[in-house]
Amino acid sequence: MCILIVDDEKDLCELCAESFEMEDLDTETCFSADKALEIFNSRDDIKVIISDDHMPGMSGTELFKTLKEKLGKTQFYLCTGDMEASEEELKKIGMSGVIEKPYDIDSLISRIKSENNL
Figure 1: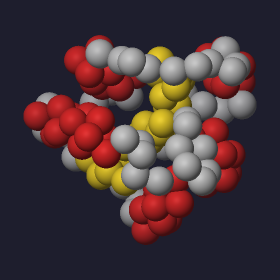
Figure 2: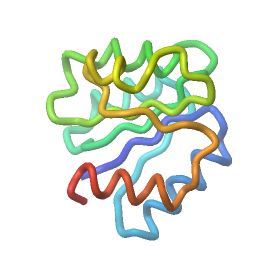
Figure 3: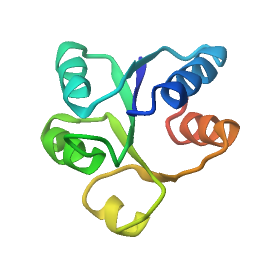
């Protein structure tokens, strides 16, 4: 079981991954949606994707739409600082939830663990 963290802010992405790993959770990081697609398609153990929305190239929302049919039981969380749609609206299209930036890393870990039985 793996958590894929996607964010073009490399320091934040790596800090997030280190924090999950301190909780004994396997993580993989990447800094673009294109790389996230590559990783998702090459692994069969990704249980959760946490993706920034605003990234150069493909956004987190576009990543979700590209992966939607392939996600199966994989949960997809969108991180954003400026909500263009409500969390309820995004859940209706299949996202697992929204994580508002800036976020508290301990709260994020607690939420991901509790919502995904980790």
